[in-house]
Length: 245
Image (spheres, rainbow, N blue to C red):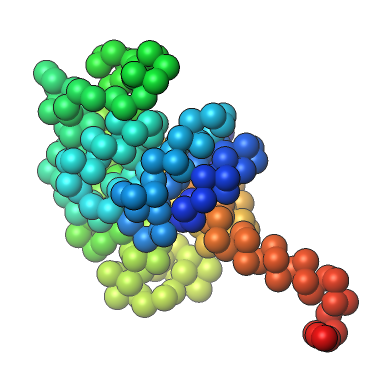
């Protein structure tokens, strides 16, 4: 069964909690391209702690301190962008794993709040390391990346992948080459026994790839939901005539 999620780019913890209580399997807080940053992420993650959704954080880069801090702040998993090699994937896993199998430093920040911090072995078993394949180099090495122990999923950013493959802004719906690239990642992850994740531009895209067997699908983004729902409500109220005061 596919996990369906939503991308969180806004800094308001109330919005984050609404997303977490909307029925999505996961909410991913975007520190790479979203408005949320180091100074605003804590209340967003705090709000998500009280929802049933799995909380993910897309970190800005590969730096170990960012990976460790995201987990310390309460994320259930991290999404690591621009992974080009199995070595980079293995380094990300090691940063998210306590010794002796990794080098994550001990310091879960909510442990002193509720006394419920999991021990190292349980924390390692529970956390999810999701690596993004979105470059030509990463795509060329996707089989080796998917085989890295501890990688839970290979998540594709289709816009960046198309760009770096020389396909511009083509999509799976307009380009056979883009479609075949996504099919290749899906077959590779299935063979490796892990999940493929896919960032979807529309709910229709998510539905299409869900039927093809992709196990992790981002259905929407909070800012886009707000804009499109607001525009749709206004259009309905106007009766489509575009009249204003």
